[in-house]
Image (cartoon, rainbow, N blue to C red; front, top):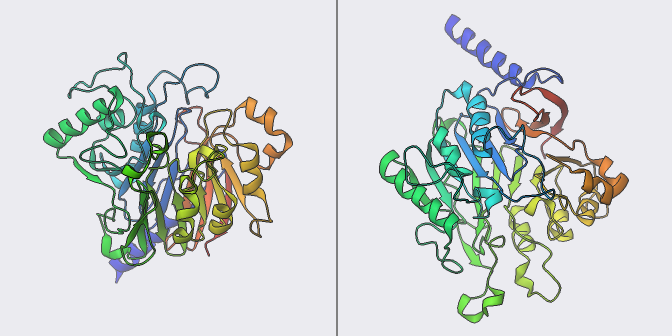
Length: 411
C-alpha cells in the first residue's frame, strides 16, 4: 500500500511539474503521460521534435537551408554551429527525462533543403561515414535514428529519378547507417496507423495514434487502410505537369485522446492560375483529416497554402507558422487563418520567426499573432483533454519560457 501511494504521488507530482510553465523560468521537463510537440526555430527551415506520452521520440524534418542573402532569417541562436547540430542539442536536452540517446523515428516530409538539409562541397565530412553533414545527416551524427521514413525509399524514382548531389549524399547516409548502425529505412505508407507507434509502453497509451494520410498523391480514404491516387498516371502527363516535390509531401495526423494535430509538409492548396485541379492537394486531404486542435501551416504559410476549404474543414484552435522568409506568411493566407467567415470561434496564431520585411508588407494585421519569434511547444496534458502553447526563447540554449497560452480544451 505504501509503495502504491508513493508511486501515485510521484506520478501526480511529475505531471504537475510538466504543467507548471511560468514565463521567465526554464521550461519544466517532459513527464510520462504528457505529449510534447516542439517546433524548433533555427531560422533555416522546418524542424519538429515529438515526444510521445510514453517517451518515444519522433523527428519530423531537419531543415538546413543554404540560401544566401537577406531573403532568409539569420540563424538561431547563432551561426557558431550548423542547424543540424543545434537541432540535435535541443533534442538531447528535451529527451533527458527519457534517458534516450537516440531518436526512435524520423519522418522526412520531402526532399527540399529546408526540410532535409541543403548540400555543398564545403560542408563538413562525417567523421564516420562517406557523406557530408547537413540537416538530417548532422542530427543523426549526434542522435542516432532507429527508423527513418521518407516518401521514396528505396528506389527514389517518383515522379522522376531523384538525382543530384543532395540526394546522393542522403542516400550514402542511409546506406552507411543501415549497414553500420542498424538504422531501418522505410517508405511512408498512406493509410496505415501502425508504421509509427509508441515503442516503450504501447499498451498503456491505446488512445495515441499517428495516421498516415498521404504521400506522392496517394491519399487515405478514411476507411480501414484504403487509399486512392489523387494524381493522374504519370504517363498521361507532359513533363511540365509532373507532380512537384512539394505536392508529393508526406501528410500525417497525430491524435491523443480528443487532441488532434496536422502536419502536411509543403503540400499546395492554391495552384497557379491555369493549373489542373489536382495540383490542389490540401482540398484532397482535408476531408479525411477533419477538425484538429493544432494545424501546422503547409509550405510555411506561403501564398499557395491554407486555401479556404482546407482551413474551414480543419477549423483549428491553434495555427503554427514555421517561418524563415519574408514571404512567410502570405498576406491573404493570414487573412484566411483569422477569418470567422471560414469558421466561427476563437483561434490563435503563432510564428517561429517573422521578418521585418513581412511586418512592413502585412501591416497591422501581423499584430494578431500571439508570438512572432521563438521555439513553439505544444504541450498536451495526460489523456489529451487539454493543451497549452509555450513560446521558448530561441536566442540561446536557456530554454526559458517567453509566454504561456491556454489551457485550451480539446474537442
